[in-house]
Length: 517
Image (cartoon, rainbow, N blue to C red; front, side, top):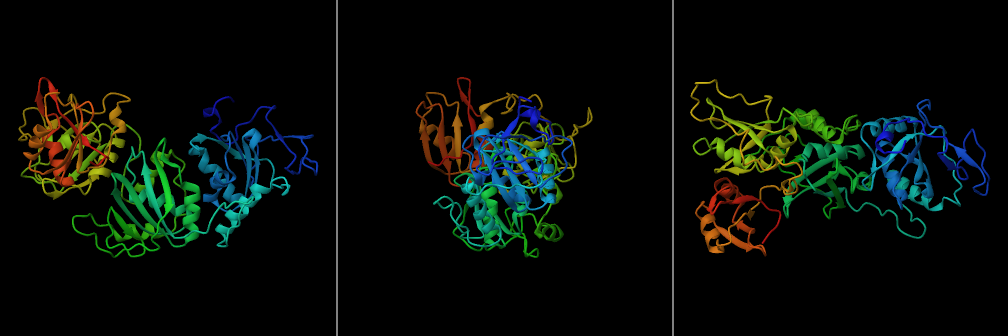
C-alpha cells in the first residue's frame, strides 16, 4: 500500500516488512529486552482479522509531531491512558481507557480521515491488548500524558521535561476564529462539534475585522481546555474553515436572545430579538443536552451539514448537485426584482433561477448551482438588510425553481439566469473562490478604466443613495477600495453598480472586501 488513499480504511493488512522496534512495547506474543535495545523486532500483524483493542496504532505521522498532537486524536473519545511514540518511524501507539472508546474512535476515523498538521494519518487497532512502556525511555511522552490526564480529571497539570506542556484553563469561554471560511459555519455546527468535550452552555457569533468569530462557553474550564487542545488548527470541512481557538478573557457570556447569532442553551425561553428568526424551544432544549454521538460516519462537510440538519436548522446533505434552492422572505416587495436578487446572491454562488412568489411578493425562491453555494449564501445573507428590510434566508424544500408555462404571463416575477455571462464562479479554480467575504461596508472595485478618477467613483456611489466615507486606489489604479457608511448602503451599492457600464467596454465589478481603509 503506497498511497494514503489506499490506507484510509481500518484494518488494511500491511506488508511483512512493516516492522516496529519492540524495545519499549510489551505484548502477550513478544518479549523485549529490559534495557530497551533494538536487538529484537516485533511485527505488528494488524489486519482485518484483528479484534477490537483499546490500543490504537497510528502510522504516517508527520515529522516532528508532538505527543500532545497525537493524544489529541484520542481525547474526544475518552481518557487516554498510555502513549508510545516511535518518531523515527513516524508512528505511535495510543492506549485508551476502554475498548468501547477505542471502537468509537476507529469507527469515526474510518469515515472521516484523521489529520495531524493537515497530513492524513492511518489509524487501526493493534493486536496487543495493552501498552507497557519503559518510563525512563519514554519520559517526555509520559509527562505529557500525565499533564493531559490531570486536566481531564480536573487536577493541576505538571510540566514535561522541564517545560510547561499545559496550563490550567483560565476560563470556560473560548474565542473561536474561522479562517478560510469557504463554506458556512453555523452556530449549530459549532455546538455539535464542541459538545464532544462537554456541555456547551452559550454561544455568541459575530463578524469582526471581516472574520467570522464566536465566543463559546462550556460548563467547566476543563472542557474548554480539552476542546482547545484537540480542535485548534483543525479544519471543519476538507481543506477549509480552519479553527483558531484561544481562551477568552471573559468568564461568563451574557446572552439576551436565542436566534441564529446567539444562543443560551440553559434558557430556551429567551426571545429572538428584533428582526431575528426565533428558535423553537424544543430544538434549543435538545441542543442543550451534552451530545455523546460524533458527527457521524460521513465526510466532514456533510457531517457538519447533517449535524445542523439534526438540530432542525439545515436540511442539506452537503454534496454538490441539485437541491440548492433558497427561500428568501421579508423582502421589500415594492423594490425587489429578480435581477437585484441575482446580483446580491451571485456574490456567493452562480444563481440559476429566481422566482418572486405571485401571491406573496415579499418572498422569493432562488436556485443556486449546488447545495454548497446555497449554504454559503444563506450563511452570509440571512439577517442582512436589503432595501430597508431585514431578510430571512432558509433552505427550501423545493429541488428546482419551475419556469412559468409557455405563454403564461407571470409579470416578470420569474427569470432564468442559467446562461448569464455574469456568473462569478463558472470557471473552475477561479480566484473568485478565494475572495468570498461576508457583507461589509468596504467594497472592492475592479475593472476600472484608466481615465476614471476617485471623484468619478465617489460621485457614482454617492448617487446610489449612500455616503462614501473613504476611498483608496490600488497601485495599478485598475482596482480600488471604497467604504460606505453602513453595510446596508454597501449592499445597495453592490446591487446597483455591479456590472455598471463605465465606458470603453469596461464593466465595473463590485464585491465585498475583508479590508478596511
